[in-house]
Image 1 (cartoon, one colour):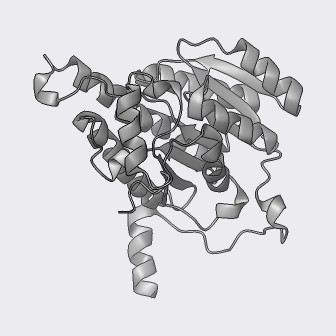
Image 2 (cartoon, rainbow, N blue to C red; image 1 turned 180 degrees about the vertical axis):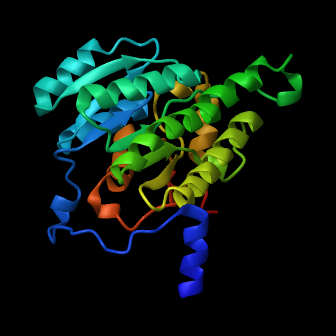
Length: 279
């Protein structure tokens, strides 16, 4: 065993040797009071549901947006939950912007304890061979994969300096299976890469932070508006629970990974898909 530990230390650095001191009350374990959470793509949909859940759990929250206005959401979270909330405009596909915003959040809030790399876009171009040029492919890579790495690299430096942190990546069931009937090879490939990036970072960051991924199935948000009702009916027929999920049905997964309830969980991927990937 000592040889195995020595080998790991050579790869990732000295590992923690003591278990954390945790509350014996399970509800306390899920509390985020005193923590700062940053959620990209949180102007609506899954991102805002997660941000609100974190505020409900007591965390101060940094919202990220690109084009959708969020002033009303900032006011709502502040007044409803009594936590500190600020919003930051950022193009997550630009590494320099991401690094600048992460540093600004750390300055404004004093630190970052939880970071959710959630922002992303859907593929609506159809079959890859029918798409002209490579702009659509590059856009998917920029926003669904590269942006995740940019966020991880920027916040990872903060986690390493403070010796703790939780990074949560929004992947997709599409990183596990090939969706039907829609054709979306580039999106599937990007999300599969996000899952493996999460596992790889979990090992790399083991001495100072945890990294996990959440893989949602079909969720009723704006990102799926390009899909016709008839096509969605096919989704439902292939999902054992027979419907799309609600954004709120994902928040428990994100809260678990963010909180002290998961201090022994890293490199995990939690699929929340209504059973789509089970058969």
